[in-house]
Amino acid sequence: QQQVKQSPQSLIVQKGGIPIINCAYENTAFDYFPWYQQFPGKGPALLIAIRPDVSEKKEGRFTISFNKSAKQFSLHIMDSQPGDSATYFCAASGSGNTGKLIFGQGTTLQVKP
Amino acid sequence: SAVISQKPSRDICQRGTSLTIQCQVDSQVTMMFWYRQQPGQSLTLIATANQGSEATYESGFVIDKFPISRPNLTFSTLTVSNMSPEDSSIYLCSVRQGQETQYFGPGTRLLVL
Image (cartoon, rainbow over all chains, first blue to last red):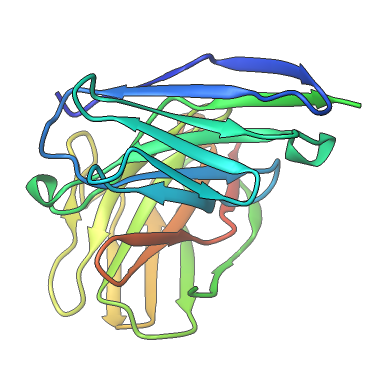
């Protein structure tokens, strides 16, 4: 019940495309859902986060869509660029698990020029 | 956002030895965490470093193997004891600011021969 399932494992898109990464969770006590971006040799960087009281949040080219009834959320990257090539992790936490972040398995994104 | 530094950034160690990793934050934070990221894998929480008390370890991690210190609100250390090649990983320090936002350090890349 503590798992967060992320798909796909890897993704290749052309520049300008809209990659979509999906995550699903089981624990209804989760109430905070961040996305992290990690470049090789670096630590994960917080990209964008959402709480379940909204269905969508947009920051620049990054959008989170949230479906509370389905217990799913996804990251969309608009007008993707080669510089977006990185590994993306979704995560979830809630007051029920002392706020610890549970991470998805990660998605390696390659944006071709 | 918090600025987090880790030392060393990388190391190559012999099996049976121990390595202490330092994490320094530029502001006082209540909660600090240590994660392990095995090659090509997601992040796994090792423990929560509690200031003034013993760390809280996750299932599968024990104090004898990963002793943690948290002497104040800006500093923590993680020791990887009696290392084996299976301990080769990236070790990441993380801090929480505010209610839920969590930031990560750059990581320590450990190779055990």
